[in-house]
Length: 224
Image 1 (cartoon, one colour):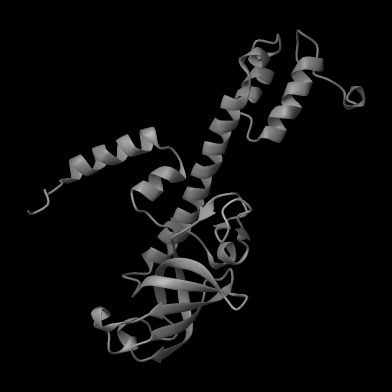
Image 2 (tube, helix red, strand yellow):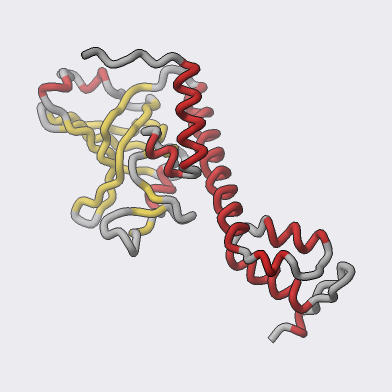
């Protein structure tokens, strides 16, 4: 049977429900959205110590399927095998492999990219003989120059969302007893919105050791 047609209003309602129950990166994975990144972020990603073979960005976000925009430096086509592309985006340079097969229906690599042009890549980072390479799922030319600017804005936007999510999680981990300690409104507000566990620990020390009233806080020499 044919799948039901979803209008724009229903799509937005579904996205709101998913983001409400699955905040942060989980919602993006469920909705099938690729994380926007730069080449430098892919190069600097570290191996996940918990999930073997997976990569993490330096800020802790898991690096699964992503999208990036880059300029084509050189490319080489191996008929019925793959297109090998060297790309750079101003932050770094990386090799891209786009596997081809009969179902792709691509007989000329010029339909995908040309040297000196910008392309959008969707794929994953894989390690081949110790070298990191992007294994692309999809490669296409940019529709307009605005797409390059929009991509870098999305990179910043996704990072800011991640920071806000961390702040919310850190605030939830602060015990209620800490927030009931007599202290200035400024100290309590700072504790609620601590950006990290380290910040929360420092604020906890200041609140517990500081004067019950006022904003005097605690001198660093008092901390052992």
